[in-house]
Image 1 (tube, rainbow, N blue to C red):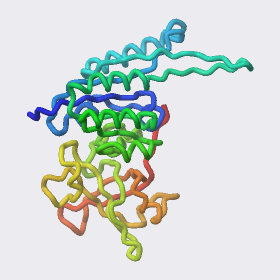
Image 2 (image 1 turned 135 degrees about the vertical axis):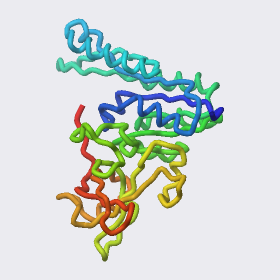
Image 3 (image 1 turned 90 degrees about the vertical axis):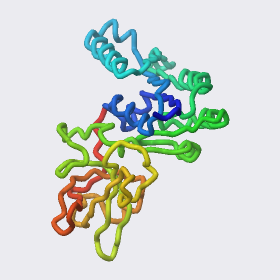
Image 4 (image 1 turned 30 degrees about the vertical axis):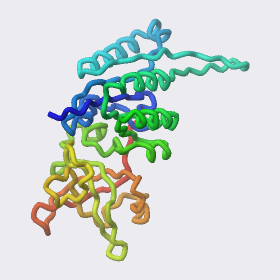
Length: 276
């Protein structure tokens, strides 16, 4: 086992509102430990509306059950009380910002950590990341939509949560077996040959180390690829769109009829996100 001590800090509200709805914390834990490190801190910061809980028993029941599930997976749950603000016109807004709590905890606990995985897309954490790196920590970022570009550039590695197998369920495929023939996966276009009308889509076939080895011909690589013909692009998706490496694609895997062990991508579309 690696002697690297790892801490994970999850900005749950930012993640939930930006594509990480129904995030599986058991899979997140497995991803954070993929290199064999010791998970020393697992902190998740959640909003909690105590006023609503008093009046809405269903909300209270669901919220407490969810928190207990996270604890069963070994996470420390830190709740931030929802506050209400009423403006001069009588409009009420709610807010539960745990940024400060997360930042303080990360700075204090970093003394005993070698690596930190920050799960958020909030650019307000830019100074926190810099401070943690100055303490000698390696800082990686995992996010979904609306991730700060500056934050992505500052961290030591950025991971799109959509690409991590099963981290966020593919809601229209509840029995999905990620990576197997007939399954639906998420990936990106690694190469497109415009004049021939085809290319290749890359996806992570399993959670493991060596994510930096993107050449799937290397036995140590956790990546795989599928051949994609232009006819498999869903309505609204153009070949020109595939040049954008930030565009996450969802597609089905079919066994190739031309190449033994090869895969073909079918029904290729932009990532489908279920609302909160």
